[in-house]
Amino acid sequence: MKIEPIGIIHTPYETKNECPIQPIYAAATIGRVEVFAAYAGGLKDIEGFSHIYLLYHLDRAGEIELVRSTFLDDEPHGVFASRHPCRPNSIGMSIVRLKERDGNILVVEGIDVLNKTPLLDIKPYVSRFDCIEGATEGWIAKTKWRPKPQGIE
Amino acid sequence: MKIEPIGIIHTPYETKNECPIQPIYAAATIGRVEVFAAYAGGLKDIEGFSHIYLLYHLDRAGEIELVRSTFLDDEPHGVFASRHPCRPNSIGMSIVRLKERDGNILVVEGIDVLNKTPLLDIKPYVSRFDCIEGATEGWIAKTKWRPKPQGIE
Picture 1: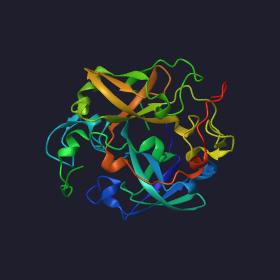
Picture 2: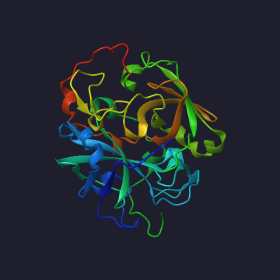
Picture 3: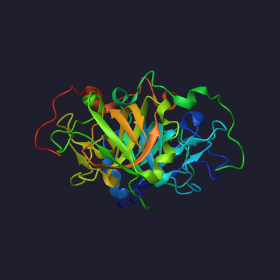
């Protein structure tokens, strides 16, 4: 399967230690999603959505382990039961707030990825499809927020 | 970027005309997500989540057009402001209900993809990250439900 970047995500985060683990831990962080000119036509009508999904290539993720602990607790969890960036196929996903569009640039809030992350897709966030109230959160329900440990990927 | 399937999604839908446009239109449809044995270890703890994201390869999508009408109305919209399957990089995303796990098979409800769709990733649905109440739905807010037109991709 052939995958090519359609743009680049510009953020203030140059290192993994700086980078938050999820958009809700980066609520005030502004990023600029640059969509390459060849794809910019596909942004028509995106301004109407307050939130969008970004799919991107976790291009600096470390070694894949199928079971490992995450940033949220010290227990080992399956990679498909977590959002850990070191995963087969290295596709990351974030829901961010769309503040404004400036041509082929989307200014977004709540961005949690490394600077210059390759963008793969944008999809609109649609509450009626995507907001599932009362979904069971598994092991994550038992965790408390804690700062991200230093020195890990 | 190298992408390889990690499994196969088995569903009752053999043709595009049969296939619903979103999981909420396929609420009763049961599918079986087969995770290849080499990756099955990554499913540890997934049973605790009531809902999961499936990322998959839209392997039978038609020609990509950056602006086109969708199944929801007759107006042209940018592909990144819609969930249309014919999109750059051909990555599809569905949120489905996880009914049970049987080894490397996940039985899911609300599946809206073609039979034998290649699976790329599974991520847990976490309400605190993913349920954004009051998100603005753009042009989709103005549409009413209608049956999917016949004979289109």
